Image 1 (cartoon, rainbow, N blue to C red):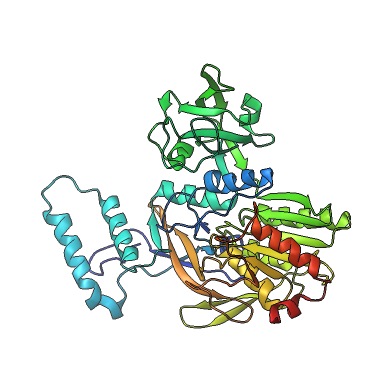
Image 2 (tube, rainbow, N blue to C red):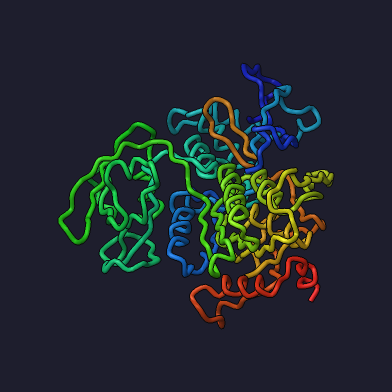
Length: 471
């Protein structure tokens, strides 16, 4: 909150967030964008992240659409921590009274002399907070309105309120298309209703074209705007206008509910000798799903794993620690460096299911792999536990803390730390270089990065990861 004028009485105490270093503390959980990509849902930071190439496995398109559409669009900036509130002494700090004097002069003048209409004091304070944070000129620090704050946290928590369907875009003839706004040549399509979702129960089917929401056309809207119209509070009803198999449009009512996003997709490759695991985000649910997928692979006797982090904007840093710890048995996963330069080590969790070096690992990254994805990739690379295949990652090496404000004033996120790889590399604005680089401009095939990973795994013998890196 804005510090209290020492010359005025105050009826409330100010609050400030403090970051928890306890990995088990729910208020200390590190969370993105993140993405929000950068992640990584609601565009709160103007950062564009390239989309990964269209995978050759059809089910992967479903996962990509889930991230791009249902998980909050541009929620890319991950590596966040939820702030714990701590009561502080209200008032302008005595040592800063001179610096704050111009602020109080402006505030008093506005309150006492503004003649353009009634003053909304709540909005005035919110504007001051927004201005302070904007003055930092940090794309990852920002003020959020109450609604933006709530929706942002929903998007990166792996849950949201809506109908539970993966959506995408197609051209007028029904072929997949990347298009900006809906119209005759750009239409919203249901890729698949989620299992057990309100959409499935209401009878929505894969391939359905959505042309309207609650009686209003989608023409002229972006896919994020259309998504926001379909989403809504649990228990409320949304009416979708649907075209199915070229037939006449009809309306279908769906009662919204809390939806848990599907973040992990698996496939068997190379005649069942390789288990492909795609992770679309870093919620706690996603981390648990990775462990389940790995246990299933080992139970089937599979000893070669491809972990696909392409286009993954990040999320909870605690989830990144959990995912990396499935492969790394001990030692640091990452370091955090606070504003005073103090570095704190975050070690691997015990009990990882795939720490045996005989289990071969290739991690796929690209320019859309950010923050929590880079924490995992950096840990795998620095420890020599596996190989990185693909393109250089995005390059986001900072941690943001989310702090709610009293009096229904929304909240803000603030950059509070850097994160470093186990070898203390800071990859911010640089990214992580893969061990096996793939030039998509010249490469052939439907998914050359995946092809390169399969070739690398075939060449490994379970102990050659470090040798391959050194070469």
